Amino acid sequence: MENAGRVKPIKNIKSEIKVISAPAEIKQTVDELNLKPAGRQEYADVIINYLLKNNTNLDSSTIEFKVLVDLFSTQMVNNSGKLIADDYNFSVDHFNKCRELSRYVDRTGLPEVFRLGLKKYYAQYVISKGWARIFRKKSNGL
Image (cartoon, rainbow, N blue to C red; front, side, top):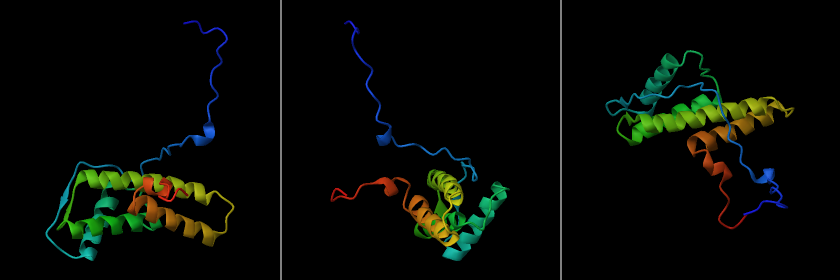
């Protein structure tokens, strides 16, 4: 076929979804945590120590860190003290993306209280409920 007279289609950049590439504040692992059954706080303490030991520059005061620890401790309660590497890595990936999103929010000119609320909202939805849930359209077409 001859391409004479054909024009390259115009790309609709408004419909593209950009992927956030985030620096790894928390590294992925091949370790599996398998502890004896305990309470949520005991699991949270183990997770905090594990995260801080393996990620020396990690800021444990962030909302994202607290949400991640809560998620992992809940998973461990529900799984009799077990946290497999795939689940850990999946959530860590969401944590790292959420931290990058928080850095964007921090660079806005929004009031501090609004920025904190926005970061808390994103942490809950990106880390706890999964990244894709933010972008999923409602079933009624909205």
